Image (tube, rainbow, N blue to C red):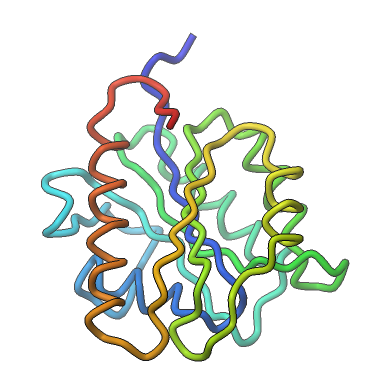
Length: 180
């Protein structure tokens, strides 16, 4: 039995809500290379991370899933945590995330879904129906709802990033599967 499973954080939000901007601020960098050495975030101490980022504008869930699988397989022997963004889409289109969720449910990782409820770019808020769908599809993992209103407010966005960093630190420092 794995008492110290690898941690995987999924930053979840509607398309174009600031997921990549959040990653960039946490790690203080713009580009991520998941098939190189793990990186560290200054705010997360010495914990190594692999960030599997993708563009919101032209991705297919199947392509994103293939990239996630490849990165996880590539770093099987690496003592690292993982961080990926995922668009909250449940419409049976090429962007639908059900396949990604099914894979993460079977992964054996300690998965944490960090749901960005409010958009950075506009006043779009994740609906209760979509949150319910997410809860129904997540069989193994913990969902954390971050509902701070951040629309175009640098100060509030920074506060939300600090909230995410504190949560990630708590999870990474736990030696067993973390549950709220």
